[in-house]
Amino acid sequence: MSSTSITDALNALPVPFVPFHKGDVWIAGAGPGAPHLLTLETLYAIQHADVMFHDALITNDILALVPQKTRVILTGKRYRCKDSCDQVDIHQQMIEAAQKNKRVLRLKGGDPLLFARGGEEAIALARAKIRIRILPGISAAFAACANAAIPLTHRDHHSAITFATATLQQDKTAPMSHILEKTPLILYMVMHQLRAIAQQLIDMGYSPQDHVAIIENASRANEKITETRLQQCLTIDPSLYDTPALVIIGSIIRLRSIIKDYMKRESTHR
Image 1 (cartoon, rainbow, N blue to C red):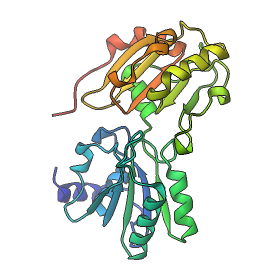
Image 2 (cartoon, one colour; image 1 turned 90 degrees about the vertical axis):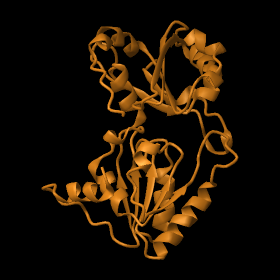
Image 3 (cartoon, one colour; image 1 turned 135 degrees about the vertical axis):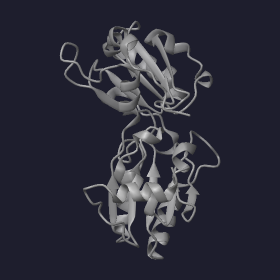
């Protein structure tokens, strides 16, 4: 679909969008990567931005939706990648573009406020007195579990769930002591620290036989789901797994065996 036809389709919707004004910065979530999981408002923002800053998780399928008139700037952000942009520089570039009266879109994988630095960027923009909108996106955890037939919650199994990451500033590894005891875990950006995390969890009382699912490239054509046990994660080779990847730990994975054979698996990719 061409950019013009997308814009026409959005304009035909019965509910009008909030106008994207010059000098504004919109921080938007692009979801896990498949373009059909974009929200309509984020698609509207993509069609109307003058400048778009995007992270390394934005797929080519989504970039193909960007109009040719838009200036597109890759900001990187991969694990220990020397080409990754400094976060302060990203803030400054967005502020300068907004001050030049541009419509600025900051497009981030997943949801911009969940392990995506959207909060840091919103604070920096607010301190510079830049008008902001934040558009939610489908988090990778929701898409990954839906595609893998893993219920995030189930009344017969648990009353809470923990979303966590192992990465703090300056590449420090966060301890897992802050998680709720023995709840199912959804872990973001942890493949390179998974062996140490598995040992921490076992030391905290998780069973070495607890079920684990590793989901690579959730929602994308090359999505892959691997089931294993926490014990096996002690010796896992992270280089064998593609990123982005989510790690899910807990009894909810056992429910997958009941559901997965009845999941409709028609590909939307061409």
